[in-house]
Length: 574
Ligand SMILES: Cc1cc2nc3c(=O)[nH]c(=O)nc-3n(C[C@H](O)[C@H](O)[C@H](O)COP(=O)(O)OP(=O)(O)OC[C@H]3O[C@@H](n4cnc5c(N)ncnc54)[C@H](O)[C@@H]3O)c2cc1C
Image 1: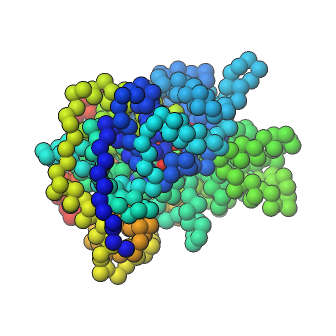
Image 2 (image 1 turned 30 degrees about the vertical axis):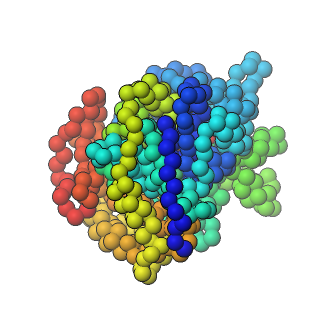
Image 3 (image 1 turned 90 degrees about the vertical axis):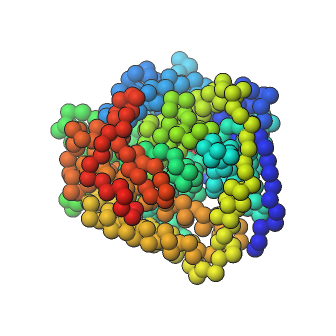
């Protein structure tokens, strides 16, 4: 199906991705600068897109009995000291005001008799968030923001100098129009990436993943192609979830106070905490679950046998706010109410909201590309930001855009780069190639799973496996140029698959560069099983230069100067 015609749009502020951060950015821009024209382009429909599509049942980052400094300390401890303290602290200062924004939008956040939010932990509160996304979307629309749904974007567009981001190239999935959107300021909020590793559910259930299956990491891929600096891709995120239905374990453990146990009903997490004399880090909860399997004492469970009827019903209600499918699973059990709920680790994801992989940004959420901002899961360096942290980053980016708006030059995009982008995006429609995106996707996921530490490999890898992954991914990258698309949906999937391969390649280079094990499971090198603070209390970053991925190392402290990086073959054919 050939494309129809091209369409040009011009706006003041362009937001790519109308999810959590994108919608909040649009609302704030609309409220604080009503004279500016704001446009959101979204791959799906902002009413139910991205991570919030199914709803949420908790605000994971809210300071109950805590302050921004304590929050920073907690994130630092949980992240083994590697993180951008400036970014995390700036988020910490806004977590509670962002929660008030949620309340103003009409999201029910329950309170106790003393008018305090109901705490799940010192840093999280309960929320009835099934309607959170429609409420955000309605607020965007009521601000008069222009929204283009079903319009996936795939290439950044630059001005005449080739240095300043001035817009984006996308296409309309319904009308098949090629769209160029020119803007004075561009904010990218396309989230992290799923589908790089083999999903734990096979066949038709393969989209039942922890991370939104349509977040293909295209914003990250657009940035990489354009030479933006990326950070910490090697710190993947894998979630501990209920088996098969992939509902949150936090709802069971934090929400009900129940504990994790192995197949012999031994409380292995509690035991470890007693042994170590401290709470476990998030990745250790996953690590010690995997260890039970390795010892032959798995599978693991959350023991909910001591919940009374009311507590069990509260649990069911909480799940109804974000993961209704587990209710069907719970109810079909003859042993109702269920006493043990099986848990397991998900496949790994690239994600800057729970983890810290993403664009390297400054305190105003500017990326290293002039004119381009990033916020939410697409922005790196600040793990554990969750929904309120994504909102906070959106607010900081918009504040900087508004503050500097009169200094921004008029956007211009040369026709040559529009034609080039159109050629790259639409070429699969005219391809004589012979492979489908599903075949390429399966191959990508197999390579990543088996050589780059997938869940079936206990998240472990080593140099020799990663070098093979590098070789196979490069071959796949060239072969994938033969993917063919017959209609708009297939075209989107082909582009997503190309983006995922690129992200897989960058991920492998980052994993090769970090010759230590810092975040067990998220990043485990069997050939370097220990933490090495002497060499790796630092950021591993990367940039694409002339089609090669160049790995960089940056100091942990401001101004984050570059450091020499040894043993990395940067000019190899990666
Ligand atoms: C299963 C799950 C449970 C969670 N539970 C909680 C919780 O209980 N509490 C909490 O505080 N946090 C929770 N989080 C974290 C929180 O939801 C995320 O950190 C946050 O929603 C991410 O926001 P975002 O804007 O970066 O990404 P998203 O909200 O995913 O938005 C990205 C948007 O970009 C769009 N997009 C993608 N590619 C393109 C493209 N090429 N062109 C145009 N648009 C594109 C997507 O369709 C999507 O709408 C959870 C996350 C997940 C995945």
